[in-house]
Length: 121
Image 1 (cartoon, rainbow, N blue to C red):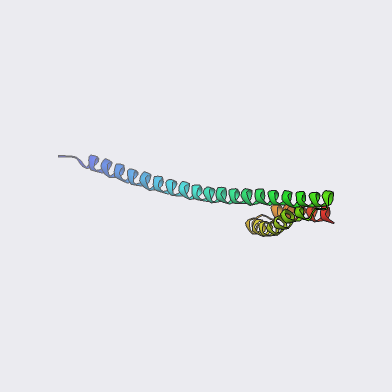
Image 2: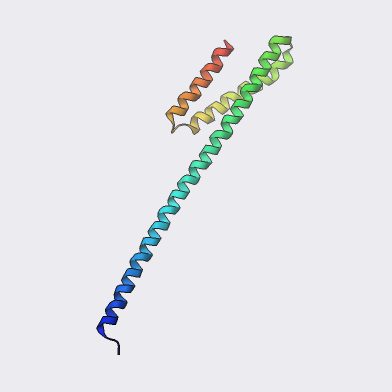
């Protein structure tokens, strides 16, 4: 027959195992939560990069159209200019929305768009 010391040791072992299991579950949950937050931040960053790249592409199209028209006087160069300009405003609004949580990035975007307007005047 087992003595009271063995039962006590078994109970302590069971309690210690239970505490460790709860701690492990808490650590896994906290890690999973951090991973999900990081994933959301990565997805957001990719969206910002994508929209910013498209904005840059359309700004280049606008500029090319302006230059082509100024050099040649051919109205055909105004077509990509007008299309690009319309898209620039749409992409700018998307980027402002995506950067709503980052005032420093919003000010950089405003500076970029202000520079763009100054070159047109």
